[in-house]
Length: 281
Image (tube, rainbow, N blue to C red):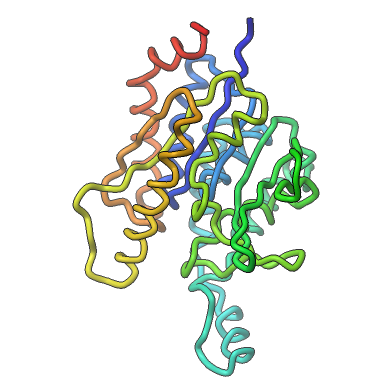
């Protein structure tokens, strides 16, 4: 009996590069997921993989795009100041570069909408107006929370709109924020795609770490909150790979290679257990 493996990738900014290392380890061991899901930076890796990019290609794209998406657009600041008649912006970055980067990756695969992706995929986001969770997917479930007619680039941007860093992604009378607010690791949703076994990849908060800046405190608070929510969702999975990336900051692009290496090594360390879960049903 062929096992349908699901892979659920959590958010974590640059830490998301570790997911590429996880996939590289799985590729080397001839393990190919049937379906995949990802939140925030996890949605970037999940989308690239679902579109057919391998680990090597994802490494190059993630590195290139990471540099692009943290660039501030002065036009965004000017427009925000003019519109609000003062410096009242909803995020340090507009998030438009995330969308542009994903569009570029989609262009080479000649696809645009999420329902054009062959591999079953789920990407969570949260509407800031209603506080409700929405799931972007090519395997639409029951209820209005599932959206399958959205562009891949917009879905990833919405799920990656980290509060205070990126402005909300506005589309169809909704203002989407980072999916990690309510669902930082979509284990349950990946299971619902039809997976027999689900492996989740998470980034536990660093122990006893607290910076002195408002920015550091905000990130630490959100880290703890999303981790508690994620722990409940992880109970619906079969195996969890916890990747410790130390004090890696959200946008520390100089840590991409480091995070990918840690993700690979941690997966190889547990590859025997992973194979037992997959093949010994």
